[in-house]
Image (cartoon, rainbow, N blue to C red):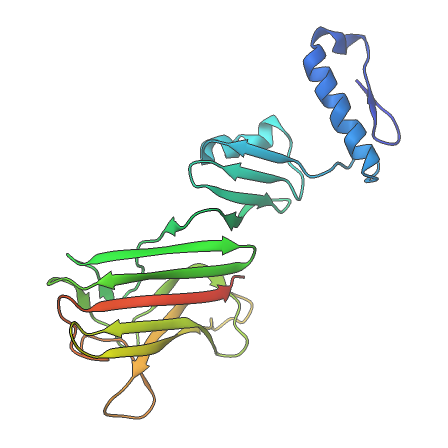
Length: 229
């Protein structure tokens, strides 16, 4: 098959062996030429695959270009190709997320968290029903591990809020604050979970006794919304 200066392809004698493949290539070349992208360029393409394994095979089968999109059926999300790798850019259903916090061990508690992606906007919500073997060992070193990193202007940036509900008792709202890397060129991957302190001014780190002594039946929840790096 020959390619003209404007990117349009024309068949030769060898292409007559497989007319279906030939017509497919011809239609793509006409579409790209009409799009005004010029020779050697093409319009972004849209694919649909069943699994991530099938998606990984697209580079070999189709030849990827920046802006190509793929819908992955088993995760029900869209990914876009940036010229070197795929990136999730739109989820069509909530994606289950296991609670990732270095100071919380779920134990026999029940954690139900999920996130969604819309371009570079991440939304994560859910709650943990504390069980008898759940531990809330927070403190200054405890960190929430974000599902996607984000850039921070300055030393900290609010990611969202956290809530604590004492079974048949008090309700507290706290703040989740992103932790900047020592290297400002590296996006933040962790956040601090903090609540108001009854006995002191300012916020204190989540712990086994803050904002109260946690026990079975209590509920810890997150409501995060931020732009990823």
